[in-house]
Length: 170
Ligand SMILES: [Fe+2]
Ligand SMILES: [Fe+2]
Image 1: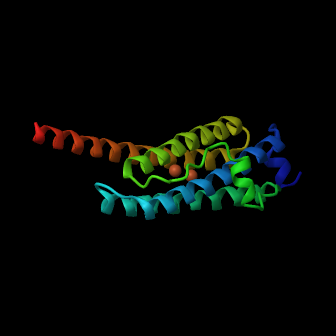
Image 2 (image 1 turned 30 degrees about the vertical axis):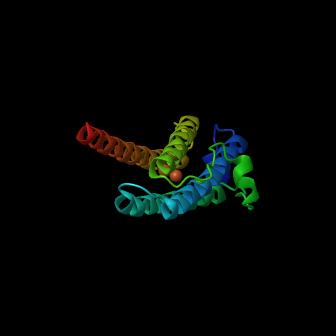
Image 3 (image 1 turned 180 degrees about the vertical axis):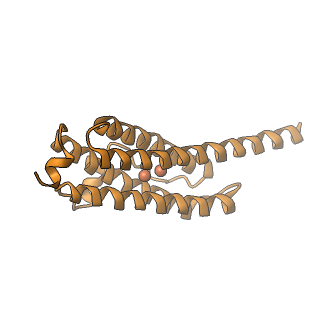
């Protein structure tokens, strides 16, 4: 049995490859969401948050690298055209047409919550069967959870700042 057979023992390989390709599309969209958002943001805490968004962008790109390597290792074909990213990805890309920092962060937060579901479902699907893919999914899942926490913390800080300003005005 070849690498593919070992990996997908007891797993619907076609379904796994489909999930990995969808995740690959979503990572590229998440990368661009952060990358373009970090360049556009305006508003309070911008100088602190901008570089952090770029760090998140780099991490999403790194997830794409890990996913595509896995697809190739198990004998699949990665998505070849960016035109498929929006078609196959289940996590929405939100055009950052409003550069206000809270709007940008909300868009990123929604993408993170979708990514968490994505890696949870890949982990559930491979649990006890495809060990390497399971490990990959849980490792990425942990980073997505950290991303979500970062954004929630920034939004909480922004809110606190707004509340403090309101109190000063009263
Ligand atoms: Fe990611
Ligand atoms: Fe993320």
